[in-house]
Length: 158
Image 1 (tube, one colour):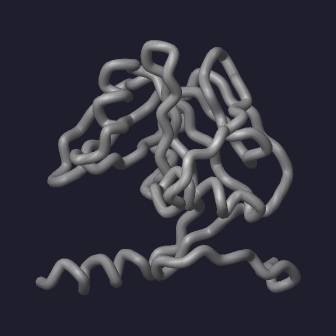
Image 2: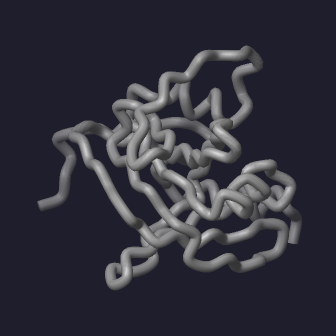
């Protein structure tokens, strides 16, 4: 099977958009990730998939802690920035939560300790134990077929 066919098929699954951040030696590192999911309620576990070639893999492995910020519709530029799609240096004002950097005004900010690590092909799956969480109101930034999308309100199923 061709890699492009597989990527296109996986792009048909609509996801939210997160920024994964960590702090190592007083330096903040972040990357955009849409391969994120809830794993367990008891204990509270989440999973994020990180490409083996991404520097974030090294940072999380050493820090053993990471934060997940679930982005709102208004944060598309932050998603693009942390995905490396904007080639300029910006000053990001993080919201510090439990001594970890999170994206200010995101819908959810959660702090995780590395619970387990699973090698999976060309990615590494980090299962994080959620130790603290903040939530805020708003509409999520979504990703479908390689593009950002907004929810259309009023078409909700009851």
